[in-house]
Image 1 (cartoon, helix red, strand yellow):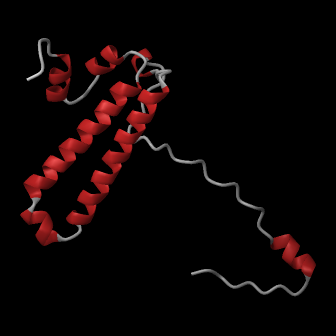
Image 2 (image 1 turned 90 degrees about the horizontal axis):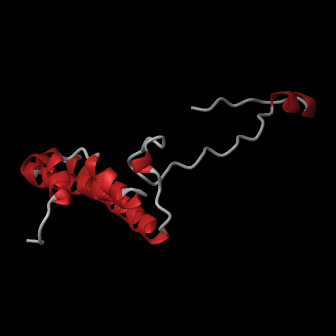
Image 3 (image 1 turned 90 degrees about the vertical axis):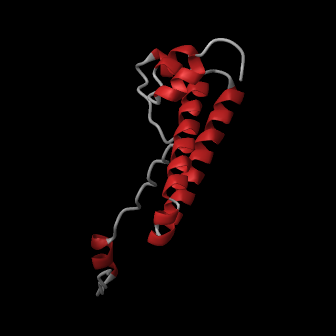
Length: 129
């Protein structure tokens, strides 16, 4: 609740007036904040890859919001637990792919992917199956 303050004069109002609040800094659209001192995470200069990685981050956030709304209903959450786990894994994969695409050294960024199965798929040699 806000407190109602009644002022008797303009001078009293000026003494209690609150200075304009500067707008809060905008949050990054990226879900993962990377250490900038690591050269593998230095941003690429390819603008298209940066935009694609931003879109992957956006898709991750949308999946996360959808899963969160399903989780609010306990019956649905219990019934669809395996599917929600799959949605979470897909979201994490999108986020890690965004990190690799955004990197100026993608091969080094792949080595730092925390999901071992994704890292293995990205580092495999041979044709695509």
